[in-house]
Length: 242
Image 1 (tube, one colour):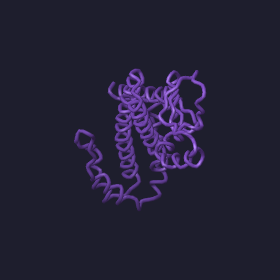
Image 2: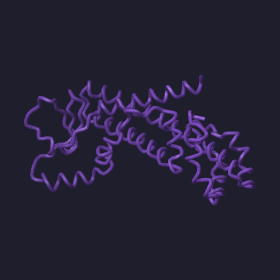
Image 3: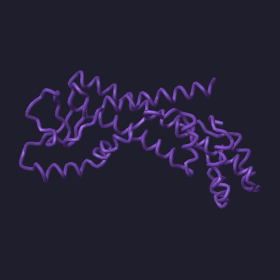
Image 4: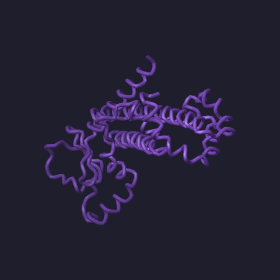
C-alpha cells in the first residue's frame, strides 16, 4: 500500500496498537461523511465495512487494518485539497503577471496577496499531513509523493507579514511617522532613492521580488515550488491510475 512494506507500516502503527482507548473516537469519525467541493461523499466502502468490527472486536489485526485505511483516507482528502490550493495559487500568479504587464498597481498587490494565501495553505496542509497520527500519514505521504526540493517554509515570514499586517503598520508608524507613506510601490532593480526598509510593500518588477519593510521574497521561486509540487502530485495520480 502506497509503496510501504508491512514491516514499515507496522512500526508506525505500534503506538496505536498500545492505545486502544482511541477506538471510539476513530470509529465515530469514520462514520461521518466527508464531501469534496462538488458535494460528492468520500466514503471508502472498505472503511464502512470495518466500522462495526472496530467497535466490537478490538484485536490488534482489526486495529491495524482500520488505522491503515483511516490514514489512507485522511491522506487522500488532504492531497485533494492541496491540489485545489495549488490550482488557486497558479491562477493568482498568472493574474499577477497580467496585472504587472498592464501596470495595474492595485491589482498587482491584490493578486500577490492571494497568491501568498494559497501557497501558505499548501504549507499548512503539508504540515498537517506530516505531523498527524504520530507521523503515520506523513510516512505514507513520503512513500507516495517525491518531496525532494519542495520547500514552502522559507516563505512563512512573508505569510506572517501579510497575516499580521497591522503589526507591520505599527512598526512603520513608530519608525517613520514623520516621513511620506511608501506603500504598494513599483520599481526596478535600477530604481534609485527608494529605501526598501521604509516601504510597507514594494515590488521590484524586473526581478519579481516582493519586499515588506526591507525583507525580500522571490515570488518566481515560490511559484516554481507550486509548479514542482503540482507536477509531483500529478505523477502520483498517474501512477495510481496505471
